[in-house]
Image (cartoon, rainbow, N blue to C red; front, side, top):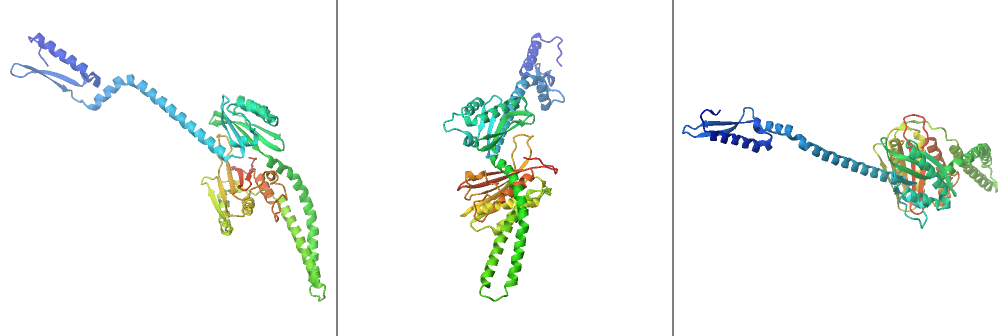
Length: 458
């Protein structure tokens, strides 16, 4: 706008310097040279004046956009690098906390198992209380690595077999992550199931899980099947003669009860006594046949809540005054195939045993929930737990708990837990009993969730 013809050279240089100064001073704001204009004019009194203004269409949004488009590459690379690093740290910590929480829940849930969790480098993350109780020596050294564990097992003659099987399984799983190794070992008069598997999060192996489970009760229960088969045949042979005796005694009593002789009362008393004792024997035979002839389950798609809630309300009405009953059922229990009548019968037997075990102020708790999983590939299990704080079961009796006719109660038949085991086994489930004298008993029944009628064992 300034007419340069015949004007003072000094003034022209001065204006050019002003323009350069504005360029440099406004540069940090995003190169505003595209949005401002400079005008020089005569004030009418011989003095030249200039003004700085904005071009048409200038806006703050345009200034910001220009600054971002010109400067983004100077600041974005370190900025996004920091963001990515912090994101990685947050995700890593979240996964670690989630993994630790899952481990803690799994260990707390499976207190009947010895559990070891080992990293790829052989460091032991966890070795639970059950393992120490079953295998630890009073003077054992701290076990922090897999090498410490091998040394500990090899130094104890009674545990060398466990160490050998565990070492073989460990090496196999290390080279084949998709494989789980199962072994059954015998140490003294106890039987254990050893399992080594990878703990997976999707397709990634996070650690290795070693489980040692006491299956002595199950082994003895399997052996008792042969005894049951023999007793079933004997019971069928005895039942018919007993029935004949009862019928004959009834006929004799009815025939002679109208006679009036001095000895008739004594005779009738003896006849009634024979009948009562014969009836007691017949009841025992009937119970044995009910146990031995438990038919194949007639399974329908059912939710355990539909069985437990009516059962809870029924027992709540007739529970002895000195016993309180509680029930805790998770809301996310899935439907699966089972025989409602047989499962209800099994629950009744366990609850009745719990009631009989409490002779003072006590409580019974019935709970049902999904068992926690350490890997997505683990089967989905529902566990029902019935606990009491009664007299408990001595350790020497636990291995006999499923034996037919084994009982410590004067009026018991010893068939209740045999029936429970048989029903659970026919449903492909598993039963675990933990007990301590004067502290109480916990009975856990595991069911595998399936949407088909074919069920394999847990």
